[in-house]
Amino acid sequence: MRSNVQWKLCWENELQLSDHVELTDFFRRTYGPTGAFNAKPFEGSQSWAGARPELRAIAYDSSGVAAHMGLLRRFIKVDGVDLLVAELGLYGVRPDLEGLGIAHSIHVMLPTLQEFQVPFAFGTVRNQLRKHIERFGRHGLVTVMSGISVRSTLPHARIDLPPTRVEDPLVIVLPVSRPLSDWPAAKMIDRNGPEL
Figure (cartoon, rainbow, N blue to C red):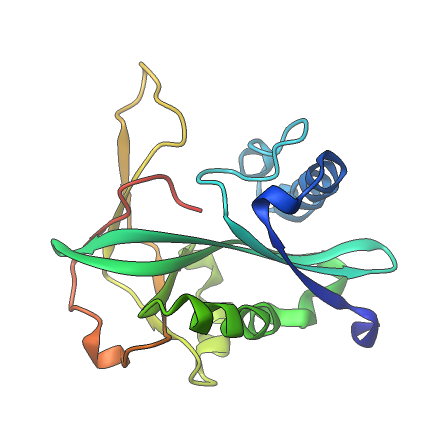
């Protein structure tokens, strides 16, 4: 079945309403089993949960969307140091294809990351995915870091919640045009926006 998966890179402004509806359904089905709250942002035709990606790697097969990863270039502050990154997020794989793996989507994105000439790709994942992401990190493509707080804004300003939240996720760093040794040591990363 994996040989029938075709990856496509799509700029956000190339997506049609039907693409967003199909992706929204994919995310509800993929994120829903991890908790109803995780699927909640994907209502109607909204195919993003926080920040909207600028580029998406989407895998398709005969059953529709098989996997997805979004990318958004942004400046983050790593212990107060401004750093340009390509944030990777909105990752999902249809449950029947879980062996497809995060590595496939990053490999599809890698030439684009190199064209962007960003020093690093960056992302965060829930601590519940530690075993999965560490297994992926063993192959040396990414480095997984813990013990770093990440501050993000909420996707929507609300009067009943503070405008930012601080979490302690796993931080993933992929060197692109600079070596990992150039990544600043950090205890706090400020996204200066909502997570992807």
